[in-house]
Image 1 (cartoon, helix red, strand yellow):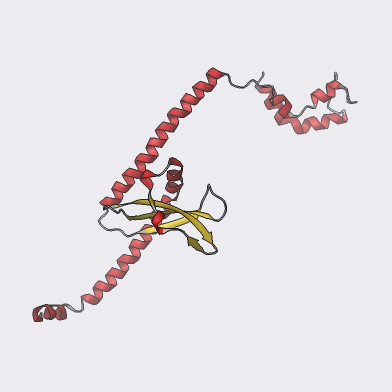
Image 2 (tube, rainbow, N blue to C red):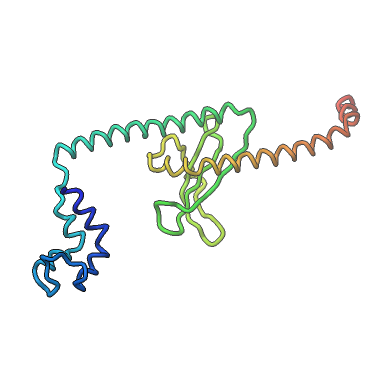
Length: 202
């Protein structure tokens, strides 16, 4: 009953205002400013404030549940970044690509960037950077690109939300480069004799 009464009061609050006209008031409530009427027309938040908050034992159980869920999801996100970098390095051919979007956790004008690029000590990986938007241009320090595998969890979540768009951009870049390479090869295929003659003359 303690739970149902606030819910009913919240759902019926608009109708309760109409009771003041005296049309729908219960027979034991006067429409002429009595204390009963004031109590009857009390807004839902007054009634809700009387709901008993969870006790310490319930709070601790909830904290334990959320903590376990957080640990599991945090591990999954971090592992995904590592597995993606491993998949990326297994690709036989790739090219750097980057995208930017408005930063979801910063003031207007701040941007968040995600890119696929070479790692300094070899290989490829996901990197992120933050910058500012000035009109149509994006300003950021190239030296501040940092590996996503070492980023805080909040940053990893923002970055992974951009990953589908980054992969679409990567596919588009690869397709365009393949077409350019095909055209270059077609031109070179017309010069086999000249290439051989040049080597022989050398």
